Image 1 (cartoon, rainbow, N blue to C red):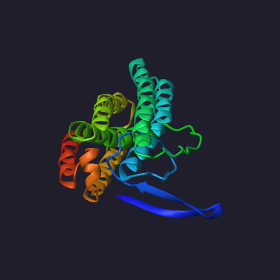
Image 2 (image 1 turned 60 degrees about the vertical axis):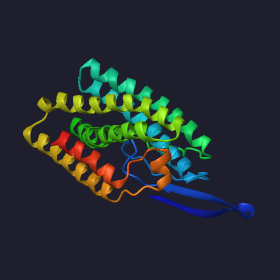
Image 3 (image 1 turned 120 degrees about the vertical axis):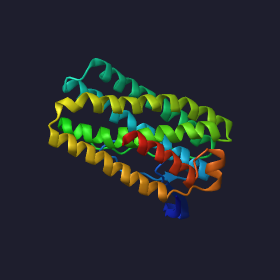
Length: 240
């Protein structure tokens, strides 16, 4: 859903502020991330690409934090390295999506993220279950769809490249989840599974409210509501 409003600025000017709300952005949203709006988006495509770039940028500190926490909790080095590599991937994704946004007259908002506080293994795993196992996995599905269907050739090429990385990020989330199972009590495991079920239910509700503008389905390859439902059914089967 695209929401735009004009706000007056000093000396008689005005600025257009747009928020594009969708369940379909990929990236790992870190704890405490403050929402941002796209200023002077230029077009609906610009607003979409700028907001996607913003979320990719926010994923960089999320993966760096994950790497540090995995190391602190004694996770295998292969998982730590994969998390660090994922942070580097997100830097490239940010630049690529920024380029698409600029091409359509939009600028990525600033990422406003407070300092991270120490947290327990279970808290780390809960974020991984929600943002990784559910939302990043779904984001990889959607990016793959866009990489096949976007009419804009630059967007299609960019999203194809991003999809390969996002699939690895989703695989990392599930690998972290599997590694941690034996380190949790039965009660903790059930809480983790419930968090994943809750995240899946919420995502399903967002899919039902998903109705992108025609230009975003055509040029950026966003799935329609029916197509998003099909992708969501695939995710539901995977996470069952």
